Length: 398
Image (cartoon, rainbow, N blue to C red):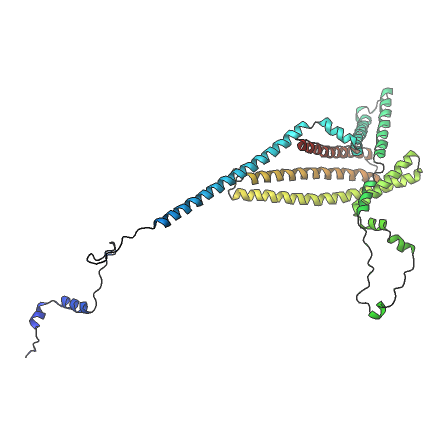
């Protein structure tokens, strides 16, 4: 079989197929050879070799200046905040120390001196004496000298009974005209005027007619009196205090002989009912106030607990921690005195219940001890009030 020969066939046989394929591809595309691991290289034979890239000196100095100023401002702010916090912490500590020092300078005799100047303080002191004598007479007659009939013991009992009665009457005289305080509160109330304007749903034909003059009546004039309107707008506890004070004064006048005994007995009975209802109102108000204080106390405790969970300590947040501790101490102190007031009101309720409901069993014993307990609690509360006033005066004079 004959074959066809091509020019340069001998040379083609000598060239490998792979090199032939590479030469054919090289005519159309020659892929650049990049070394990814090496650096960028330029043609050394180029007429304009590239410049070596250098960082801008102005930009670098500006960045360095900004960075330095930023950190300087942060450090200054941190130092300033730390200094302010330290100053505030020192102020809180100094205030606590001043209060402690002022409490040490106030003596008990000074507190009792200021208490006995007022009629309320003398009333509490005489109440302590009255019910202390009553409790001693109870123990004397039923436990200490039950079967003794010595003359000196009978004389002692007689003198103590007279002293107890004298203290009771003196207390009545001290609280005479005590109803002026609630009366001032009643008069301070604004009277609510009755509306005199015509209704908007009234037809025009009727409104054009002249208004008819109302006929005078005793009831209308009485209701329109400013004092009666002030009484109607006053809160119930103030009205109870007013009526109770007036009834007590009528009973005191009956003991002086200025009012008949029957009227005095009725006034005393009415005053006891006012005392009972006033005690119940006081218990309700005390319960509401205690719930509010306990809610505030739980709020402060929860905030302190949450801060402890977040990692805040007395060293990291000293001022906030000290303020929370101060507020918590104030709320606990207020809650303590509210509990004291509640116990005192309960003692008063038990005492007056024996008189209102005519209980006979154990009346002398129960009223003696409840009266003494109420006297101690009310005196302690008043003592703390006058002591706080003296401490504040000592702090203001420093």
